[in-house]
Length: 334
Ligand code: AMP
Ligand code: TRP
Image (cartoon, rainbow, N blue to C red; front, side):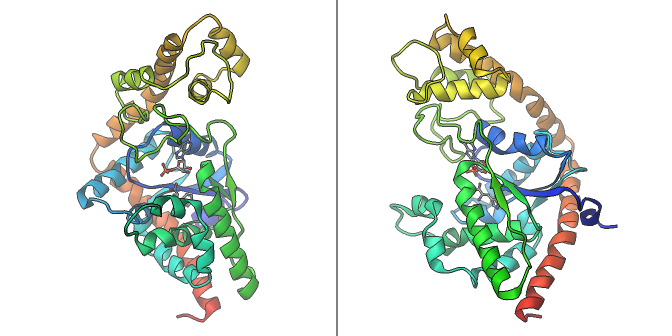
């Protein structure tokens, strides 16, 4: 029996992260933790979306290293490759093939409306066609696997909705083919903000010192990043959205400590910002330690990661290829 059929009653979950920049605690709480938490009751597929990464220029050697690093972080974060599928997008040609087909059913106007495209292309002299077309590839990723749920951060919701619209359009023409996916955005930690500037999202591609806490940062780096974090000139420590720097720090504390908001507010009632930052750093260091230990162990064990990715690609192929055949048949190809 195929992997697919064994798990037919579970909800299918698909998500992916680009192997570029450095994964940070926003990615961890916004995506990886959710993913790990759901792996018992969901049928998970987690992809390293390397073809999305090349929509902006990449150094080939660095990209290769980043693909491995990201796969290692997935496993180290607790994704169990025996329960979930972990694979690299470019290992399965069905993704690019379906992306091309979906392109032909997607009005350009839908693509031009995407917030991420507008932001990424703003003030650039030249942007690739791939950057505009990026959501078609993302739709292919999702739709190839009859995905029910797509756990992502807030910023990716629009792309999942676009995938749904493309699926609906295709189904209207050719009859039921694609499942309509839904974005699942976590309530807490959906949007961790930059430590240096709490009005912008913590970003993988912002390399400014003190902007982010990365998953592989040393305790010293983590302490330094929090010590430098922007707050305000007030003193009372409480969850107050109108004080974005403090609010962001408290939200991170909430996630990593597992304490409730009232518990946190009373804990810090008589403390100052620098005490909060010190305690926050310790809770994050402890929270990341198991992941870091597992990561270094895995990377020191040659061949293991390659085996996990080869197995993942095989399982993914078993699901993606029949779906692509179905689509090609319906539209009169092949
Ligand atoms: P990116 O880092 O932009 O490649 O995004 C990878 C995944 O992490 C996406 O699902 C994002 O929505 C999510 N994500 C990125 N940055 C954050 C953040 N600061 N807070 C929460 N989730 C995030
Ligand atoms: N575009 C997503 C991001 O940058 C990554 C991604 C690509 C993705 N394909 C996907 C996420 C499919 C969820 C499902 O974060």
